[in-house]
Each structure stands twice: as structure tokens, then as C-alpha cells.
Length: 335
Image (cartoon, rainbow, N blue to C red; front, top):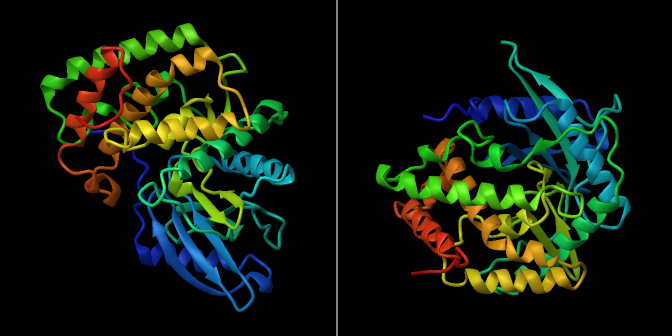
């Protein structure tokens, strides 16, 4: 089994207790009813009063240090100052952006209160052109990242080949993916070797590798009027810029519409920024790397609703995409 232990061990009752405790550290104007919105990786609570809504995030254990969370918030502040709509952390009465909360038995969790970002989540089912909006906002984030001076004590997760696909990767070992047949290990290992070779040759110069969102899917966009808001920077860190394209396809690479989604994303991106020829040629490599990274995630999160919703054929589809990649085809699309 995976050695990665990032799942939340606290009960809903304990998390609610911590959420209510967290709110006591904020001025009265932020107080309100506390309600659990969702618990996927972190637990997110809706705080609502007569005047406004807020989102309280309680971080899962064993993933980010307090300094890493503060670094995320630092980038959010810079993005907001540049005119990009992102969540903003609200400071406590003690001028803290990141709270450290304790239960009686010494268990601790970090928590952040954010302003509420209004908007509706686009869906590929309704309008595949939503991927154009996703590509366009991704380009704006990349432009900011390439020009922003990262502060001295900035600390964020590193997403490179080893941390994504190594046996001790951040999200575990792909070999633990549910329903993966042992006889398919060889073709996946061959695929990983090809990816590793391609990315070592590509390198990590600043024009192709830097601070990215790292999980920029449609589920993390909010649209209101003509404004696009981006949420959930919990996985942001250092990686190849084109990993954000691969992340946009997460879990869905094997669908028939996936090639069109990629084209729409590229169209949106090119409205604002330019993708080099070298980056363009490596898009299949980034797509395949992300798909295998999500196999590792699937193994370490096998009990979650998201992992269970993938069904019993998802790993088989991944192997099929590996075969396409090794035959120099884009690893997307249906049979």
C-alpha cells in the first residue's frame, strides 16, 4: 500500500469544532453560521452572515507546512494586485493569515479564512469552449509567474518527474492504483522512462519551468459576467508551465472529446501568451505524465468519492493511452 498519509483522520464533528474555534479568532464582522461545504483533500466550510459569505479552509495533515501555506497566500496577494480574481486571505484579530488550531489531545491543523469568490463553475458537458477560458486565464497566471520576483523565504511544493512518478512521489506510488493489472506494469514503466528522457532533454529553464497553479481544471474556475475567478491554489508549486494544460485534462484524457478540449485550451492560451515549438512538441509527454501522476493519486486516495467514481476501467484506459504515447500519438481520446 502507499506510504502517503495525507487523508484527514478527524471526524466531521472534530472538524466542525475546529472551524467554530477558528472563527473566534476573527473580528465580529466575519462571524456567521458555520456549515461544511466539502471535504475532498482539505475541509472547506461556508461562513455566512447577513452581509457576506466567507470560505474557511482547514488543511489536511502531512502536506503543507505553515510557511508553505503563507507562501501560497503571498502569491495570491500578488495575483490580486495584478488584477486577477483569486481568493484573498482574511487576517485574524492577531494579524495572522494562517491559524494553527489544536484539539485537546495535541492534534493540530492549519486554517485560513478567505473572502468568497462569486461565480458559476463551467462544465465541459455544457460548453467545451469553456476550455478556451481556462487556457486564457492560465496564460495570464503564467505571465505573472514569469515576471514576479519570488520572495526569499517562499516555500512551495516541487512537481518534477520524481515527485510525480517516483515510488516516493508526493501522491504515492502509481503501482497502487485500483484495478491495475500486474502484467501492465512493464508498459507503464517503459512510458515513464520515455517521459523522463524527454523532460531531462527539455530542461527547467525559467521560460518553461516556474510557479504554476498545478491543478487548474474547470472545477477551479468561477465565471461571473465576463470575469473569471480562479480558486484552490492548494497544490501550487514549481513545475513546467505546460503541466497546467495536462492538469486541465485530469481524469478525463480517455474521453472522446479530450482532443477538442486541448485545442480549445490552446486557442485560449495563445490569445494572451505564446507556446514555444519545443513546449508544443512535448504536450503529449505532459499529458501522459499527468495521467500517470493521477494513477498515484488514485492509489493513495482509493477510498474517496472521486476515486470510486472513476470505475473499474480507468487503469485499463491509462494503459491504452500509454500505448498511444509510445507510438508517438497524443495520449487522449476514446478507443
